[in-house]
Image 1 (tube, rainbow, N blue to C red):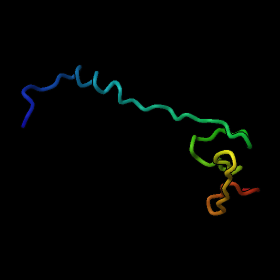
Image 2 (cartoon, helix red, strand yellow):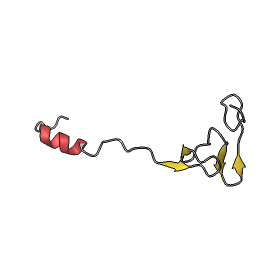
Image 3 (tube, rainbow, N blue to C red):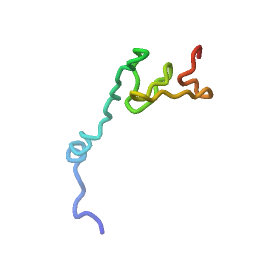
Length: 66
């Protein structure tokens, strides 16, 4: 089924006004002090959350001298 009338440019643009991108929210890693995305491991220290640090040599996460 087709719409009864065509939607105007202004109405389409008003609807699209809320489709903008939101900038990423970055936090500060407590061990290295570098900015990092939430729910991600810090590339330098491997810190994820209190009590959890990871090391992935292939991705150079949490490895000293990387």
